[in-house]
Amino acid sequence: MAIDIGEHCIDCRRSVAFGSGLFVNRIPADNGDLDGYLCVECLSEECETCGEITPEWTARNEIVQCEACADGETFRESQYAIDAVLSRLSAQNPALHASIYPHWKFVIDWINEHTDGPR
Image 1 (cartoon, rainbow, N blue to C red):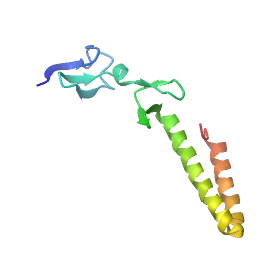
Image 2 (cartoon, rainbow, N blue to C red):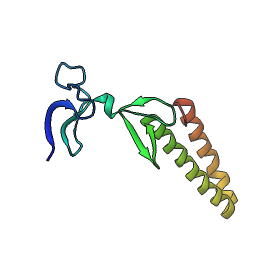
Image 3 (spheres, rainbow, N blue to C red):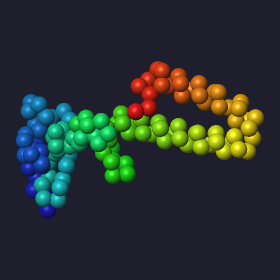
Image 4 (cartoon, rainbow, N blue to C red):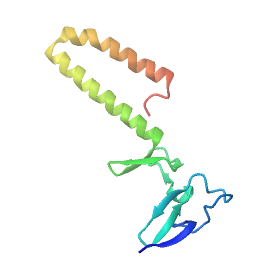
């Protein structure tokens, strides 16, 4: 049975109570031995792509990434998938590919111009 340590971080044992400066971004946590919270610093991880330390991270394929890098990766994966479909279309029906590709290229160029684009 886990020991309740109240409003303290189960990792660093600092207070995460109101007024501590760590109250806002704390999350409830239980490691099997202790029941309390994780402070924002202990729940943060370093992005393996850009090196930013962030509490808002994801792990895909055993790679820790911040949300921005993960979104960029998803963007690239989508772009590769569409490119693969366009390649198949080209092989099956060159006329159809010729009519679709300029529209797809326009969308990608617009996204890259009006956003940070793929990372």
